[in-house]
Length: 303
Length: 303
Image (cartoon, rainbow over all chains, first blue to last red; front, side, top):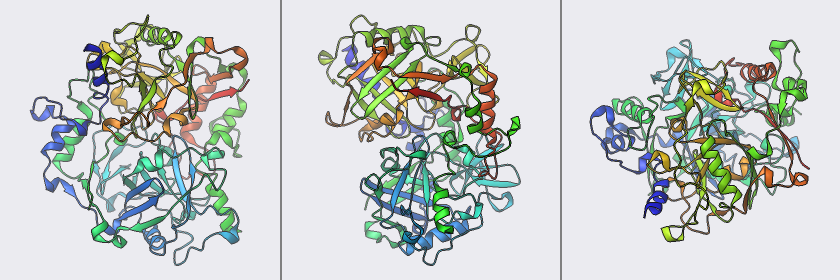
């Protein structure tokens, strides 16, 4: 039996701790993530406006995004226009770059074949960062390699230097590809981070949101074998069946989506549980946590 | 033409900078990564001992690992025994956990069906960290959320608190799964990090090396839909055709593999180029770099 128990244990300890309620003291400082999740009340969750949700249908499944209009109002508005005019429908994932990004847009190689942008603008002033005074940042006590202050803004991982505040590139971040000109990121090509946080992209590209559900549909795509992970043939590209605003998904078909609020004491307790790891497995709980290792939980109830 | 140029630009800027030599000043402080790579001499590279290489054959391709016997001598010795006795051949990838790990081992559910460990030990004293005095750490100037000092030891990303030194969990790290008992990690189940660095695992599991090549074969596997990303059926598991030591791969079939040395001035110049990003694309080069965003380059020449 010893070997069998050992094998079973292999399936528990390296843990998505949300799934298991490991017994431990309930004293506040010793709360595990599982304890915290069990203790949440409805008021600890927020339900994003359907107009801030995007639903992308791919052959492998659906990816759901939350947009961040508070940080990138003009770019998000342009993306909404593109979505409403069905710009992305029938376009494709054109790039799957290992430990970096999955990117989509118009795969046409020739200008005359490119899909018109319709009512959307071709250039947008860069929204790489914003004046700090305009935005609330819920600070998290975490030493960061790239920024002096990190935390969450409107529920998204963010950073600040006191004067400017910006959303950062973590796993699952949704952002806008651009050319050499900083204003060339109009939203017609978007990417999602599928690897270790490429934080050097912060303040160099406009972050517009993050994946709430279904990132595995993007992260498990075969990697492109061309330069920068671009697919080398049309056959490798992954067609986008549709990209819809939550406003255009009938309520009866739309799941209920709640995201853990980041402006509560419960959230700080959650963050501490990610740092201290009171489950019995851990020999050396760090007591520390990196900003991109705190992913505000999402709960989804299918219709 | 503007639109076409823009689309082409989309394929350049979010860059695997090793691939493109963006023109810039050659003044030392303004060296791009491409400049640094072009300026390297043969003495900047090291060729790992074939006995420290592992070659794993999967249906989708080959994964090549470098072992770190300096940090985990007993565990690496046990893995060598398992490899030499072909323990892993015919076993399987049993877990693909999004933004976390791919893990392999014996998929048998019942003790009596488990493959015997042969000459290998069933338990190994944990090698989560080592006395700092025994190991050289090439320090990198980087603020880290989890450790006071970070750098490279024997070419692997590492950390120290002055008394103890340990290898850390970055994308591509190879480590040993274990049960609840710290000495239960015998190497019969191994995992590779395929997501954002799960640094809370540091000093809680024994790190034994890293992937040098072919990680996309692991990172693009379909994610398991069971708890913790375990596959729920035998059909989903990915069979391991073979796992061989470089010593047992005929020299005529073995590629020449060189890894950038981390104990040179050239390496420090490389690290600066990753922090400062002098290419024209960057509006806000950070001037900073996280330890897991520095991946010592590998050059491979097929036989």
